[in-house]
Picture (spheres, rainbow, N blue to C red):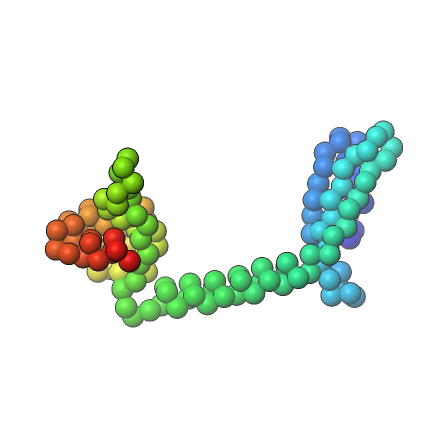
Length: 138
């Protein structure tokens, strides 16, 4: 909490509010600390126990990392799409959101180059061969 008091002083001097998180080792707790200036010589500090939130976020981050590792290292070509709609709300194409390296290699690109691209740009036949309709109805 060594950086806490200089921030309180800064709040008094500048009226800048701040919110920060801190792990209390002895208690094994996370707290969120918010400070706001009340008047010339007073600051209000609010301490909120956010341990459950932090632990949940850490678990989500670990799960996301595992899923990312599986996706990136899969031998299968994998991607996610999002629908592209016209003004009437009809799905007219799909846009790549994420592609894994094997899918990108299949079309001779990098995953980064495919991000945001239309499916029809790389697979124009999919609009007429039934694949587009299959995606549209899932």
